[in-house]
Length: 69
Figure (tube, rainbow, N blue to C red):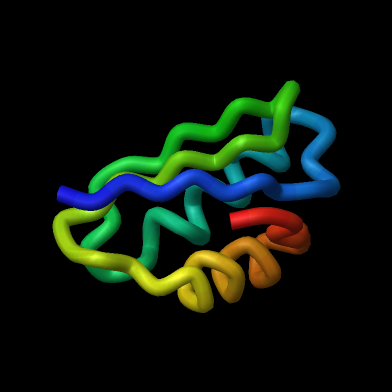
């Protein structure tokens, strides 16, 4: 089990949280996505190691930006 936390900018509402959660959740091996709207922290839990690039791509697909990993 692997866990990584990222800071995502641009999220302003629960719809934003849902979009980011859905896109990251589609990455193979991801078992959980926890988004804290107030801080922009996104914690990704996975069965195997997930690359930062895969998470960044998913966040961009949702319309947001990873500003720290």
